[in-house]
Length: 341
Image (cartoon, rainbow, N blue to C red; front, side, top):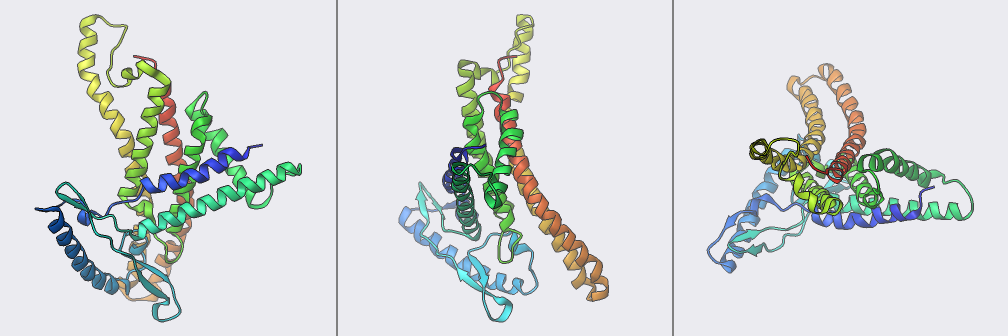
């Protein structure tokens, strides 16, 4: 039976993973200024003015759009409310941009940041509670049941059938991190399917940061496992060829090896981002048919298909968390077993 250590560690690591995954707002990433003080004031005024204009536009768009708010980021949240539209807009705080040299970086919280915080809290509560319940059942000599039994079954499957076979020998050290990745992405994906929620993994900066963390973990795993032989994962040097052939192949294949290191996180980024965005866009396209023809008779079939797509999205939420975890585990296993060329 799985001990409480992996479950508890997975829940606690979510907080660190969340902090690294906070996306910066692109509107202020590259705001060139003349002086730090004047730049901060100008950037703040520009963001505030732009935010007011965007707010007016977004409120008008919400009257007809119920899909894009689930994947788009914003400076405000919609919360359930008794009144017109059954929602209320809550404006998120705006912070003074941080000056980095001659650039102003806006780190103010956005809707996707809030969704990630909620996902992290939910993941911690579920995993830590399941670990404690599993411990109590074990002390009493009982089999886990209810939520703790379901979570244990999921953890055991991911650990024994996905992580350990892919990572290889002595892969238990990667179990807490990879379980954290799975449950964090799963909860973030699921929040995009509930009313008033939003899919933070539909933000390429979020998926890119998750992939960047995975890239660092993969490379450090390779360095620890291979030692000085890690250089073989960068420079291609075939030992079974003549010297002139070795130099020729090194010149040709070394750029390919280096490029391969960066294509992995790029693939992780785009795969998760595209799959979580595509489902919502498909639902938007189907619902728009109803308004295009202006007839409920024509809209029956698109509505039924949209409901089916939303059901498929529930499956995709689990699938994409599983695929991301599987790929990261596979990349870790590959680099740990490289001995040379």
